[in-house]
Image 1: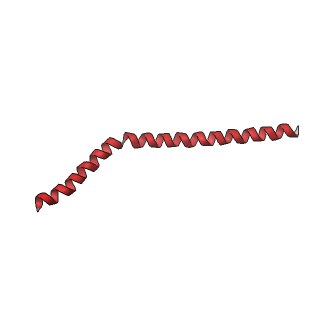
Image 2 (image 1 turned 90 degrees about the vertical axis):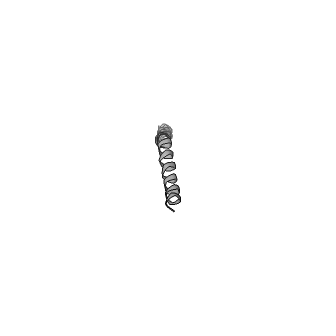
Length: 61
């Protein structure tokens, strides 16, 4: 009986470890997906701001 209890505890620990790693992978995938979906608009806004900050002083002076 004691051996069975130890095996079940070991299996429970492995399942919990796998569940934890799966949650981390899911969170990472959600984060990467959010970053990728905002990538093009963010790049365009950044490029526009950079052009404004460079061109306005050139044109004013």
